[in-house]
Image (cartoon, one colour):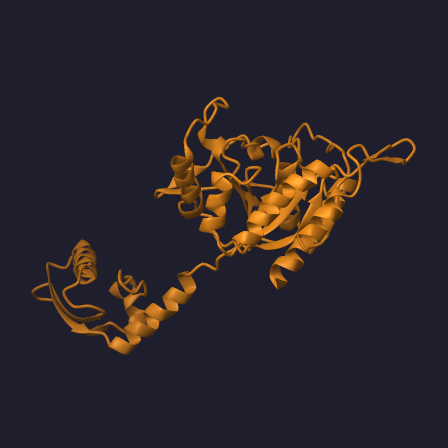
Length: 338
């Protein structure tokens, strides 16, 4: 009976620990005498264990309990603690920041579809909407519920196999954010440290555009982060995006590559491509940053599913969705090998 009680210090049963060294039962006096080996004599864990055993025995009709304690071998205790440390320590994810020099180039759309595509490839993926002023990820992914808080830990929302957290979950009625830099930095720290992300392979961070305080905070907090730079083919967009790339280089972040969004418009009737925003911006930016173009995404809109509405998520069968899958494979390969 009592051998199945779990030691509160080592989190193993008394049977597994071979803790019960002597057990005697005096039927006439209804008295049990026990000698027990514990990790630390006189510790709170010993007192808790003693209370559990006495309580259980008395619930089963024993009138009195006498307990003596001995020390478990220190080597055994150290081995168990080392084993539990290895088991409990979570593997840190690979952080991938998605950045752009300016707004309006589709950075958040890229972040969302990159995360979903990586999840479709069987990876454990988190998505942190770090664009705190311009949060849009929940709406893009069609998320209608809020995160739960369990034991003071924030549980992210699961959507398309991606663990999602965003400032949008904590703002009522799409209210504007008027916080200053230090408060925003604190929120970003909370998102990184107080969210129960679980075992992730990759954590995608949708950065705010430009090279402001929040982007700088991310670069400071996550020195080992890798980056994907998003631009359009327009020369000005590529020129501005180079600043985001320069910040990554300056803070010693690895640049995985450039994604050129809105590369062209392809007519469904004729198949003819129209280069609405010009040509060559992504290639020029990649050359300036000494990296490669991961993919070129045409202008287009996902097919909307009324029953599972997610206005910015492309299906795997969609032509643009298949391009995102190819980009995701390249990002995974480069992130794992850089």
